[in-house]
Length: 313
Picture 1: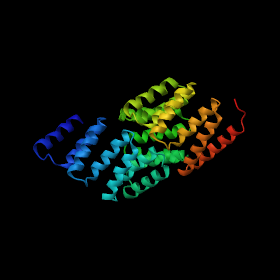
Picture 2: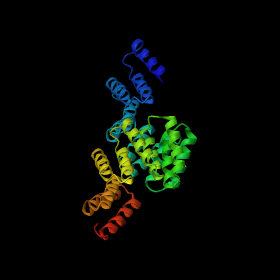
Picture 3: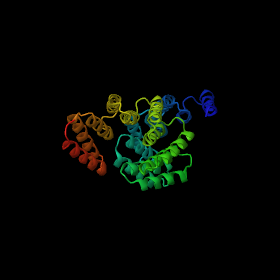
Picture 4: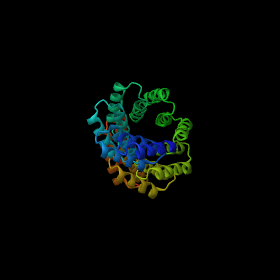
């Protein structure tokens, strides 16, 4: 990839310093090397030259996802789709961003639309797999992940999503294998570290889970999921203050993160703060309902009843 960047530099120096596509291609190469800021700079330059360059919007959106800014990413994909309403890549990537923001229904719709346009989109299958898992359809998640890997065996996201599905089935070791494979393909995937942290926590490896979360945050310092996962690890080790600090930080980044309200509520309940626990759980139930996540919504309602009728510590 470094050689490719030099080639693009040469083209810009000698042939045409105002070629928007070359900036987009160089940005793609920079992203492949983990240089998200460089990818965004090249996308910006491409768009200054040609404001209708959909490749640049998609590239910048994907870089923003990798930096934990899914809201801005969605704006980029929306702009790409305004220019080209049949852009399957923009639908696929927007689905990724919507998953990150908890909009599971929207992610499913975007994935289906991408597959209508391009039935061989590994990214769309991979995103739909994540949506299936988030909605409790683990079998559908594994099927879509496998289909994504049949189309593209180097799709790191598909390995990560299959790992999530395996984890939901209680196969934490299988989940770790999939995360390891994703990291072999792309060592800069913060999400793979976060998912592996969840699997390690399920096996009781709290130290390994926290290390993975720390690595994810080094790659993506504004990622709410990494703070959420580290909060889970800290809570499981009895570090209530550390857990709540991480949950608070996750909610500063993403105020609509239903799982974090739920988990913070559980930690508060376990430490005897019944009133704030119920407040958090009620907020979680509202968000799950808005997101169409019926199973989680019902589970939170059951937990609220349980805490409401339990004696104070």
